[in-house]
Amino acid sequence: MANVYLARVSLLHRVLGWSIHAFTACGAFVGLLALLAIYQQNFILAFWLMGATIVIDAVDGMFARAIKIKEVVPEVDGALLDNIVDFFTYTIVPCFFLLVTNLLPAYWRVLCVMAITFASAYQFTQVDAKTSDHFFKGFPSYWNIAVFYLFFWQMSKSANMIILLSLAVLSFVPIKYIYPSRLDYLTNNKYLRLTMVAITVIWGAATSGLLWLYPESNHFLVALSLGYCLLYIGISLYRTWVPLRLAFSQE
Image (cartoon, rainbow, N blue to C red):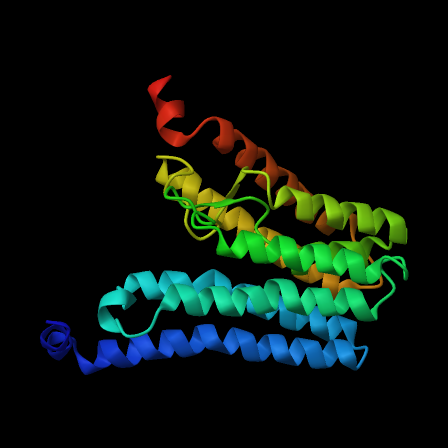
């Protein structure tokens, strides 16, 4: 049956499907370049490359769903490929950054990074790590983003360790976090969903602006970047305790 179905799939769709998988896999190569940049102490370039992996991860799923990639290229497990690449780029690369920089206390650095890798391994392998209503369950291993903010803020090493260990603990707490590219169950209002997408893009632009200006800063960009983080956390907590159907049944 699979061969019969594949015979009906156009060559163009097959090429598009394989191209999208290749695009996803490119995230791993970009992550490898980020490791090289970290090794060479070129931390700003490393963050630009980590940012590129976030962009790849943000759009490849939309491309895949647009062409129904599971039907077009059924022999490849796109979800598994995505998880492999994401674990590398969202966890291993920032963990290497933490190991070779001075953001953490020297004597606790290895233990802290070990806690992060263990927590992330758990988060990625939960059966419902991505819930049926398209949320992340537990802190979604945004370690690359966390490391950027710690690098940017230049706080004490002890404060950095407390923040990272707290996030590691949150990996085991069943709070639902927004999946920025899957907002089906965020709200029934399509305009609010589009607004959330637009705000996420603005956050990306503001955060990129901060990276571009570093070591200088800009209060407006800081407010936009951190404001989005607070909004993200607030909406995530709200949807954890008030799922969409429950929220609308009470209106």
